[in-house]
Image (cartoon, rainbow, N blue to C red; front, side, top):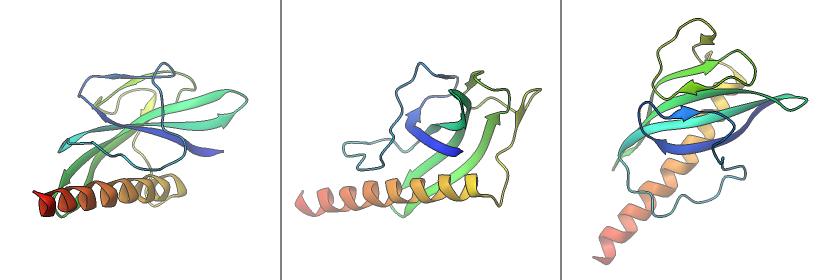
Length: 124
């Protein structure tokens, strides 16, 4: 199973569950002008079951930095962006395929954001 989708730039305390719309096919995050926030992630566990989690993300002119992360290990139960580890949640394990997937997708998104900011700066 594994990582299926993500949604960038949620504020602290945002409820992360199946009601959010998630980006499924990578692509561009054009127009994003946020320096920090939370990235909601949804892990497909099969048979319509998911685990929800978040990754703290900071963006600056040199790239993207990942901070804390957490996943609710109880199937189909929500988690709040920035929620500290409590019963039913666990830190995103490293190194793992999940962490590598998050870093890869985040790196691509960060590259696109930084490249667009630099291109806009050259035009201005």
